[in-house]
Amino acid sequence: MVKSCDISGSSDSSIKNVTPNDLSEILSESRVRKIFTNGQTAYKLYNKYIFPITSIKAHPLPSTSPANAVYNMERLIDEWKIILAYL
Image (cartoon, rainbow, N blue to C red):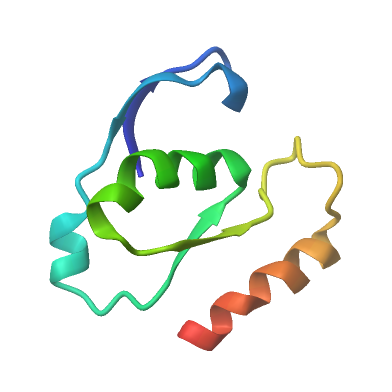
């Protein structure tokens, strides 16, 4: 969803100068029923830059980043299974 930004390494907290992608064509030409984000930073950025344009609420999922040590693989799989209802 982020087209470009300034970031130091892979630290989400350092993201600045965000240019969001224009999702209007994808959303208008498809049958998107739900938007999910990979982690809280993506959720916050979606709400700040994309939601005001689309008015489509997103559902945050836990990050799949190795830095997210709170979630083991089994727990991530369990949380991400919610997507199956939309396939």
